[in-house]
Length: 188
Image (cartoon, rainbow, N blue to C red; front, top):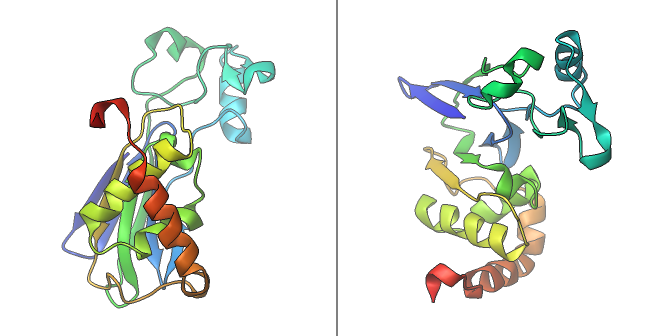
């Protein structure tokens, strides 16, 4: 996923695969990507039109090998309809209502919803802290995939929070504490 913010208001997000991006608008997540999974009807149809097949017995994989229908690599599956063409989403950023952008790998979205991601970022003091918290929580929640997060603050950083964040703030603080105290082999 590539995120481009031009002239401070023109946001373009190009995605291939299963990483994701969202923008926080008025305290709520607005998805900017739609993962390229075989369960998406138009993606499945393209694979089938190239004589590819989806193995549903092992978690929806193209020809039993790849869990996504678009990929920059995986050249051995190009003949079966796996493409590298990105989907592009264009959005106007409103600095009065938009707080931040989060781009992340599926190692985070496999264990956290967009709402949980946004709510956790709302509890952080800055973008670096937010990215660290998201990756720590991905590990804590047992993600088995690669875990990366980039948080881009916008002018309304800290201005909006969903109503639920305020109600659950103490629970989120506890989650952050637990995630922060989680140590990996690289930390030892």
